[in-house]
Length: 224
Image 1 (tube, helix red, strand yellow):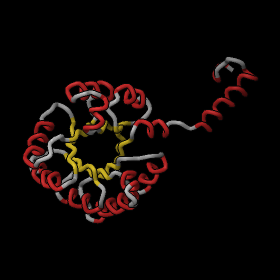
Image 2 (cartoon, rainbow, N blue to C red):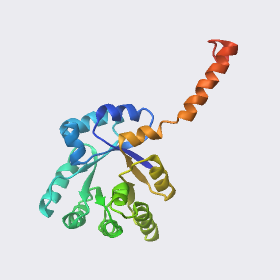
Image 3 (tube, rainbow, N blue to C red):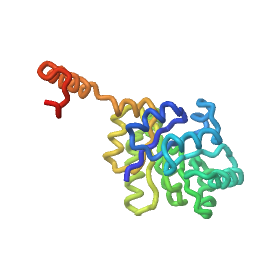
């Protein structure tokens, strides 16, 4: 089952997009939450009201040291929501994942730029891996290849984790990772809006309406 998330803490945008998109939940990070000016105490109840009680939220730790990451992850897990704890895939984070998974806490390894980061995170028990597709491209490397290699690695060794691809600059990148068989993506609001906008379809619907009204005026189909 494909999981689609919004990478946002903008409640108005999330509410608007959730009316059409089949959202599994929301992903956040410290920058997103700081921009929105919302802490978890306000954000998570509001998101639950918008998306429903079965929604999943990916929440990133603020801590940077091994002991603090583990302690913060346990505190996040104790909250009364379906939370996946996001942990950056650096040395401290990869080490923390091994410890945290001993407590059966759901984990997403985030800020993945290389295949080896994702491989280690997966082998350490991460439930989700978040490669930053477009950011990898911006560094002069091939983000699509990183995603493809990680998906192949998961398939080859039948690992119980999913890619949750992040960092898109256009809809074409989203479609490309779908072809690779990834099981989750998180979209910024602007890309989500682009996925729902098709000018050719709008033009076709307008022409249908004009043709119909020219013959049947304001009657509906069942009234003719």
